[in-house]
Length: 406
Figure (cartoon, rainbow, N blue to C red):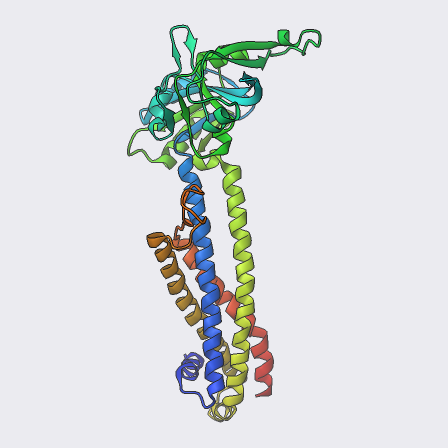
């Protein structure tokens, strides 16, 4: 293509004035730095997203089935019986969850009581989150055990092995509070310590949750024969996407089927919005950096006036002359984009390998010591396309106006 060939010659040929070459180099460097910043920033957001996702693997199930309307469902629902019979399900756990009031060590706290069936021990990766000298246990004989989050135990002034029963209170269903004797309007029971607490590094669990048996939760909340959710663990090798599709088709519109990301949709939506806002701000910075290309093209047009006159004499029209300088600006953007992508990927690799950018002054201050980084090919492609589009936008109108005077 004639305009592209001439633009390439203009870009790499020796310049008559040193200033023109310096401005071209500055333009390339400006685009490259903005591109590298985009690559690194998006990769850091990906790293935090993957890090947060890794924290959900201990307690959150691979798939969670909840009622589309209301808080509970019947445990003997025929659709749930069909679900339990699916051959790709390894662990089927029934759960019932609601809020209650806990009283311990002269302190009160509103907590989430999560009652689970005995299969929960095979579903969750408990060895990775339990701390203490005891063992995970939900019930034994007439005793009901409660495994609480480590932050909740600290807030109540309790250790991993508290003594005596811990009183739990929950309002009775369908009853108004008796102001004369409020305690008559509450169901009460006690939980005992199995000698362990759990730590998921997530405040929503560690500061508010207590794990106990399903039978205890049903008595406390007056929900005999009811469930708030069914948690599933799939057999090894089972495709999560295909399993979720099959379950949705089996259960229909009465139930919601969510994977781990959908169970924490609010958290990941916020992170995605933050990533998008960062992308917009850096794209604006890239646009400002691309304005240097206009200066480079202006100097080049002044220098190549005689060449343009020669091209016109040889038959080049105004459109082709305009395209030469448009391609010149696009080549500068493209080279800057490639250099920036290579530089950004190199910085990301170095951070992954060595972790030279720390989150805190000392190790152990945060969950991770260095900024997490995760490179996604889609982000690299998005960055490259963004640089080319921004470069085209930055030079289109200026080139059209400046070439009229040539």
